Each structure stands twice: as structure tokens, then as C-alpha cells.
Length: 361
View 1 (cartoon, rainbow, N blue to C red):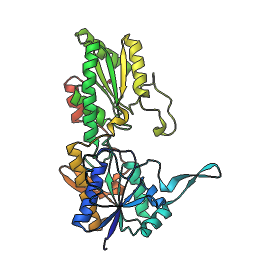
View 2 (spheres, rainbow, N blue to C red):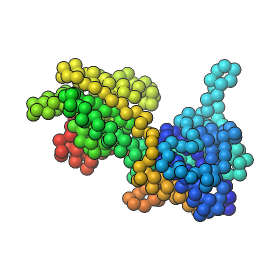
View 3 (cartoon, rainbow, N blue to C red):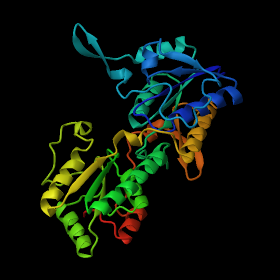
View 4 (spheres, rainbow, N blue to C red):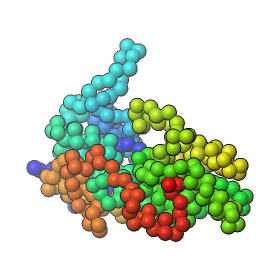
């Protein structure tokens, strides 16, 4: 097919490197392929409501490489197959997927680049199956997509978390405190594990390894008996709490309270058990923001260029990915719905154990 115009959108949570991908797509589309590029605002919303579209030029993407966030806006509530609308004062769920396809055709789009995580790519797959030509670019700071060795944004989030834990170390040591630092990782512990390793944390708690409060208390007491009067604990936000302190679980895993709830409960129990001062720091969305690292800028650019090359070859329904040192592609159908978890017996965990890091098990 002859391609003249493509669209691009970003979906799900924001992530360092989104703008760098947009820049890579726009520059390669215009310079290498001679296409026009239409920016679709606020994920798939821009293909439901047609006033959320604008042409992206070389001038518009100038200066985007170091810039955090996404100039196109994003949302994790814009599923066109299950779109919430207010009708007669009542919230209703409507299917706007036909409108998405119709508006894409009306805009003259020959293909769409969809940048997003597992949820966004699942929606993209369904739209592809309905007839929309598209390719995917994987995005998540959690680095938990199985089809790619790395996702852009993870390296930047890792730097942010490591820097924060480095700072927590010094105040913990000065005040002889137990300090808990909660990092992102709803289903997996990649940020917690690697930031904990990089910062020299004493305890790392991740969803993949069950822990007990007794084991952590024993570890802290052992440190104190050796004259080390402080302990730094890194906690993934999605860590599974032991039954003794578990919070109520709602039917949807996503509805389980996070944002410091788990780390706070662990801290409260440790303070009571050890009769020690325990402080909790929740890094939260600081891990999503800010300028992407050099590695993420390069990976984002490579992904953007690879996405336009897929379109040029007519390889729709595929997602770019990193395998080893090469940017390749895989069917989106094979990429979604499979979480890449930390291997409790893997080399990273074994290396951490070898240098004395406790996982609470």
C-alpha cells in the first residue's frame, strides 16, 4: 500500500521517553519516508472526538528529546470499546470503536502508531482486528512486558529511585532509623530489585518473593547486634502482605489500595515489634516524570524509527521490541497479557542474596 499520512497517540500512564518516541516517529516519517503525521491527543479519545487532532511537523517536535511527559496528552480511561459517558444524569458504557475506525479513515490516516503499556496495546490489538492498520510501541516504567527485554522509561525511573534511596541512606544512618522507601511496581519488582541493588539497600521486598515480618525483625536485630543501627528497606508498591497485616483485597487487583498503604502498614508493624522509629517515604509519580536518561532517549528514538519502518513494510499488528542489542518486532497478540516477572531464583536475586541483602523470606 502507498502510505501518505500516519497518526500517533500515547496511552496509559506517562513515562520518561514518550516525547522522544514521538520525535523519532515524526522525524523518520517526514525525513525518511516523506509522510505527514497527525498527532492524536489523549490516547484514543482523539479518534473518538475529532477536535483532538493536529499535524506534527519537524518544528513542533524540536526540543522534545530531553522533555518528560507527552505533548499529545494521555489517559488510562479512554478504552473506546468500554467508554464511559453521561446520559440523562447516569453513567453509561458505550462502544465507540466503530467511530474510531470511521474517524481514522476520515482523517486520511493510512496507519496509526500506538505507544502504550499492556492495557493500551490490548485495545490496539482489538482495533487492529476490526481493520485499523496500526503498529505498537511498548511503554512502562515497570519493565514488565514479556515480549521486550527493556521498555523505555525503566532506566530513568531506576535512576530516580536509586538517587532517592541514596539520600535516604544518609538520613537513616544519621538518626539511627529504619527507613522504608516505596517504589513503583504494581505486579513486579524490577524497580525495587534493581534500585535496591544499585543503592545498597539492606532489605528488598517484591511481589515475587513472599516475606514475613518475623524474618525482617530478625534481620534488623542482627544488624543492630553488629553495631549497625539503621536499616534501609525498599518496597515495591504491589508487594504481597503477609496474612498478619494483609489489607482487604477487592475483586479487581487494580483496586487494591496502594500509594504508601502497604509500605505504611509494614512500617507500623515493624515499629511496634522492634520498638524503633520507622519512617516511610513514597516516591510515587516522581518516578514517572522528568527528563529521560540518555539510554531511554536513544531507545525511544530507535523504537520510533522502527515503528515507521514497520508501517513502510506493511507489517501491521506488530509491536517493536528490544531483543539483546537489536530492535525487532513481534505480533501484538503475542506481546500482551503476559507479565515478565522477577525470577526468585534468577541471577539478580542470587547476586543480591550473595552480598547480604534480605528479601524477608
